[in-house]
Image (cartoon, rainbow, N blue to C red; front, side, top):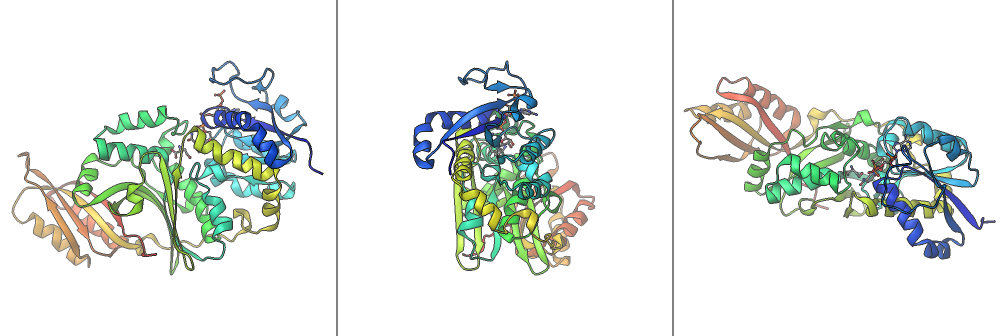
Amino acid sequence: LKPLTVGIGLIGCGTVGGGVVELLRDQAAEYTRRLGCRLELRKVLVRDTRKSRGLKLPRGLLTADPEAFFSDESIGVVVETAGGVKPVGDLVRRALESGRHVVTANKALLATRGNELFALARRRNVCIAFEASCGGGIPILGALKFGLGANRVDAIYGILNGTCNHILTQMSENGSPYAAALAEAQKLGYAEADPTLDVNGADAAAKLAIVASLAFGVNVKLADVRHRGIDQLHIDDIQFGKELGYTAKLLAIGQRLDDGLALGVEPCFVHHHEPLAQVRLSFNALSVFGHAVGHVMFLGRGAGRMPTASAVVSDILNVVGGWYPTAFETLRLWPDQQRPARLAHPDRVTGRYYLRVSAHDKPGVMAKLTRILGDHGISISAVLQHETAGDGGVPVVVTTHQARQGAVRAAAAKMARLPVVRGKPVCMRIIDLPSG
Ligand code: NAP
Ligand code: HSE
């Protein structure tokens, strides 16, 4: 028999948690109608109860004392919107151990302690719902787990970090400085408490580990995902890419190759006409290539208060409605139940590449650069060089046809050793999406 009221305990009441409180308050009557029982917020655990939150919370709800939180036996579902691995992982563990279902938006936690927590949930006969952990408001995990189950997924290409996509859009379209665009993303509530995790690609890597586990049906660990962020990306490369018809995007890519999975997060170029290139600001997207369905693309707000709260509260409804716990118990789709991912050798990944070399403006330099590419079996697709400003250095941009990553890296390393080249060449992938 369904209880008349289900008690909700919320850990964390910042950007996302605040949105959850608002949705539970404003849509209470509708949720009761849909579920046939009431959802009632019973405790909100934070660090500092005196902090102003711009929210009206009933008296006695807010606490900074985990004991007061966990001793409230009326709480049946714990919603974690605090973030980070320590100490929040232990709070989530405690929630599961005490027999409560958990809803979380915390990709960093799942990517590092997911297996342990999923296994614990199963032992305790409860579930973990985590749609909000990847792609903000877009229901990509549900779509991968339940909507595309008939497919062998061959590749996924995702824009999975709203902060980086906001920064890249502002830099590319408005010429905004990197620091100003990052500050704006923080103000809009998109960034992690430590925004380094956004801009260095770690946040997108954690999301890719989760998404890839579900898409490819294997257990992907965070360490399986190589990542590079946008913090080292130079505005000149964004502009050169634009001249050549490309948009710079931080892409999370998973590909099924003959020798295993290639998984990585890095700044890439995508042709202006590709749908992924048109994903702007805090929007996220995921392109999935399934053997039966072909290309499916999901698009929506990937960060921010209400889009993320939408995913969290939808999970609460699915947990309380009983659908999610049944799926969690009966379907062997969860990362802790899968075999480990076999990884492809990164050098064997093939694709097209963008190379920028800062060279002395002297006779014979271009010939030296193109000879190195030729020696490595790399064919040139386009060359771009502008007249110099007169300081003797000139950026030479080359795009390639299909080449092995290992060969491109080796060629770039050889170019770096030329006396006529200054610094390390910049190397970025150009992504041509499969025709789906
Ligand atoms: P936030 O605004 O910084 O809020 C974090 C909240 O958690 C604050 O209320 C903080 O308490 C509380 N908190 C932190 N550590 C705690 C602890 N040890 N015990 C109790 N409470 C604790 O963060 P957010 O942007 O809402 O993000 C929260 C989570 O959602 C993160 O996992 C993030 O990755 C994920 N997420 C965020 C977004 C987004 O767009 N922001 C989107 C998807 C997923 P005080 O208020 O007292 O400091
Ligand atoms: N910091 C994350 C982002 C929040 O910018 O995408 C959503 O997970």
